[in-house]
Length: 325
Length: 256
Image 1: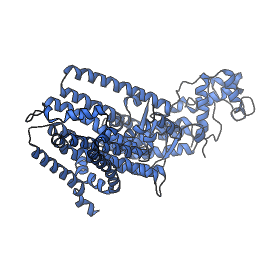
Image 2 (image 1 turned 120 degrees about the horizontal axis):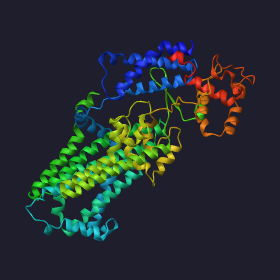
Image 3 (image 1 turned 60 degrees about the vertical axis):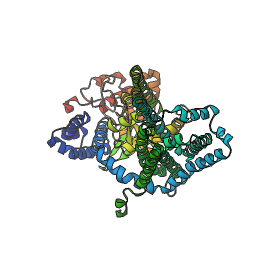
Image 4 (image 1 turned 30 degrees about the vertical axis):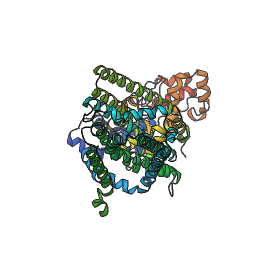
């Protein structure tokens, strides 16, 4: 068949696809009868495209059909992005299941974080000058004044406006830190490992230092509440990073690229969870941890409950569906 | 296998419908420009936000500013890539977009992965890791693209502007493949940017193919204004005439 005859015979088909595409690409909804024709038109145009190419029709025609096929492909394989139901499903079932599935990475990450934390905590208690290996004297002094009981008005809450300001800061700072901890795991896990060890050592040193100075009550009543969500989230972000780093290092039967892509799919689920946990942590830290209206025993009780909640949730939520699989 | 694999960056992808999509991966430079535009947009929004929140001077406003900063820094590209057709503002202006490796629109997970791993692409400075990685693979993928399984392509393949030089038209030789036709077209399109001598030099290579017998033996179509043109034996003119045929100037009667 000559090209001119081909164009005359089938031109109307791709013209109607083109018209339909223009409507769809502008985000409008075509009328239902036309919409139903879309797939059949698309299949036909795919066929014409293949024919035109095979018959060596002019490249201009082929390129035109090419463009239509690419655009229609984008429309046909468009996904909807519903938010609410998948989010609930993720919180109740998928996230804890993912954490349990990655238990190896999570254990290593915990070790890399809690290990230095304990070492520095005990180390600083044993020899107080050790604190200056990770903390400058100025920072150490700042920490002291922050948690000095004399600087606090007992029985008074920080005013709500400052709380909001701190809420914003915690979100900006903590989630960015978590993202970097995750992403730098791509450097064969070294980046995540570094952030875990460094943060662990820092927190351990501060805890040890404040224990030495005797400010334990203001410090621990402050951190115990949000620590449940925040520290766990940092460990999970590290675990996600270690996971992609490990996939690159030991790809197994896959190519390194495939291994990386596969592990990134799993790791990003951990990151979703980390974002949610850090949002909660920021909220607790800004509005509950800073509140001095409550007695220490009340804060310790709530803190312990929050820890139990986080760990219990990660260990057991969604198991019902998991065993069925 | 096919010559286009060597000559340009066109990438073909077989679809479930049994035909090939052609995609044109976008290179480092155009993405740089798009990034610069995005950066300017973000900076402007950030500055406006800073200005407004600063004037309010309260903790709440500070929170809005910091959360805004956080969202702009990490989720600006994610939002546009997922919900705005794979295009941030900069990408839209530069006519490029992000898609999955299989040609489908990107989802949230892929968009988040490629934008979080930007942290590694940035290393050690000025996107050096990303640039080097993108120059080391045929699809110009940076590290984030590799991990997420995405690539950046031109939205519109470069279409020949129908206005080529008016030199008449002439049938294309039998059996030229689609790609070979594209090369003739590309020559005609880029003709304006080259000196006549350079054009003649390049066209000379194809002399035997485009003007068999030296003179007008290939034969401009009857009734064509170029029929009596003494330059009909010139390969440059011959190629331009064929280009006109390819873009469809051949038979205005047929298309109307």
